[in-house]
Amino acid sequence: MSRRALASALASRVGLLELLERVALRPALIVLVYHRIARPEDCAFDRNVIEATPDQFDEQMGMLRRRHSVVGPAELRDILERPSTLRHPRVAVTFDDGYRDNYAVAFPILKSHGLQALFFVPTHFVGSLDLTWWDRIAYAVRHTKRSELRLEYPSSVTVRVDGSNRDPAVKEVLRAFKAGGHADELRFFEMLERASGEAMPREARERQFFSWDEAVEMERAGMGIGSHTHSHRILSGLSAEEQRRECAESRGALRERNLAFGDCLAYPVGGPEAFSDETKRHARDTGYRFAFSNYGGINLAGRIDPFDVKRIGMDLGETASQLRFRLAASASAGRAAW
Image (cartoon, rainbow, N blue to C red; front, side, top):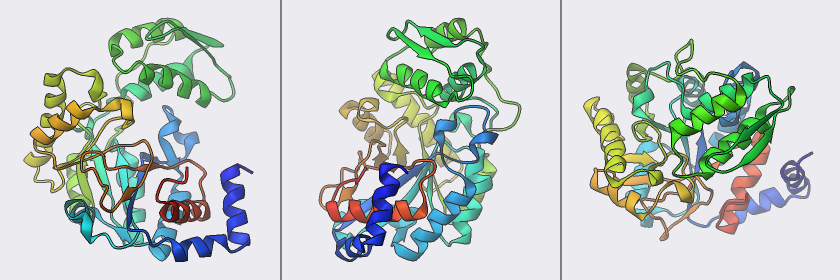
């Protein structure tokens, strides 16, 4: 049993969970971020972006509906516009990347519980078969016949590949790429192809992302569709002109389709190294009113940065009871529990 599971079970057994929920009255906005809802064994690419199976997500949303004050996209935006109206803990659900399972799996589950979520999409990928850079990297690692990968760029690292479980190797190669920050994507791909002996496909056989028609359907049902830039490049590694273009193209595509949450942005990757004060300025100048990060933390009333709205990530295998404990602990402490 993991330490998280052990702490959750113990808190429930001794009554600490109920106590935390009674005293967790601090005005705070807790924003959850998911990427994919799927079964890992069905995924041919990067399984690290799967945070819940359909059954786990259904249980988590049921718990949120019963136990928490959950806000939809419109109310979330109202809170960000007027943080002084935040009187007690509120929870919001968001998704990044716009994978097709967001529409096919998460959307029906959310509707079944009467909940809404805000979905951030990289507009270049909407409705396409195109593979993202992380899924292309995962493909090379999953299909290599070599037991180790020697990477020389952006830094020198050797990654061991376990034939029976390649998820750790995928994660390590992705970490090496993202750690480069300003790494040249094409150069990295060419090196990885040589190291793995595998050509990296640009497209999948089946559509990977939900379509514009599906996005419109989701908004009509109370969901929100926001921006995850145009092509999901890490903004901090781009020139000022490229950052503005990534932000402006995406916002323009959302406005063209009359999607109501085109003034909300989620930074690709979302860690502190993925955006800067300059990035915030470009986001503001291209018409965004709010931008979401992804490196942990909750948003306390009076301390909300509209261009660094903090979110906490989800983990595959987290049960509804574990999530319940994490939310209670975060709200009572005034910071993300883990």
